[in-house]
Amino acid sequence: MKPGALVLTLDPAAPLDGKIAHREDLGYVIAHPCHPSIFNWEPTEAAFRDFYGGVSAKQSIVVALMSGTESHYALGEKVSQDMYAPIDQTYRITLEQMAILEPAMVETLAQTCMEVVKEGFDRIIKLGVPEAAARDFVLGHLRIQIAVLFKEVNGTFSDAAYKISKRAKPILFRENWQKIFEMDDIREQVRDITER
Image (cartoon, rainbow, N blue to C red; front, top):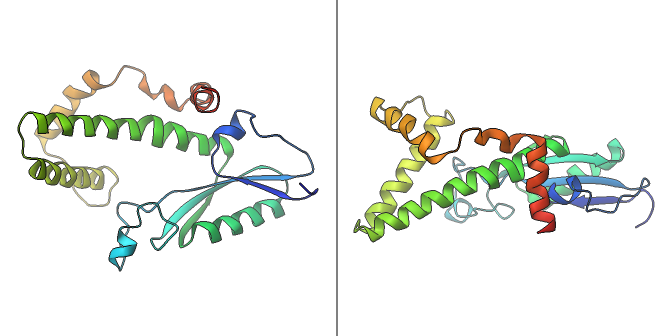
């Protein structure tokens, strides 16, 4: 690459693990889409069904300057906004903060939890619950649960729901599971991605 050029990458894993060749005369920016929120309001069916973003549904992005100048960052942000448009918000964060978001938050935790929810869904179908009823019931409850937890609505769960959640958490999760957000553990997660 020409001196002064910009290296723009998608994911923090390879940069955090030192898998990207580094030159002092280049700028390095990492940008990642947040993808359209489950609470996006979109005016058309096509935009509503743009789950990944970058077509017609608005989404936010996170951008980190790994190395280089502020002009490298500005160029990386502009290219990222054009690439992932339509954009709602652009958030400037650090490389380490991006790794806390992905892989730790959205892959290690959220995706794994959703995979377990899907395994539970498949299990209740095998137990005889009609699939269409189970799908509507589970997805409707997930939507309201997420809305309550992320304060999209001014609501709360029932006392019974809180009781059963308190009972279930130590059964479903190991003690100290939050260590996945510590940088030493995140570096292990990244190595699993880049080396194995």
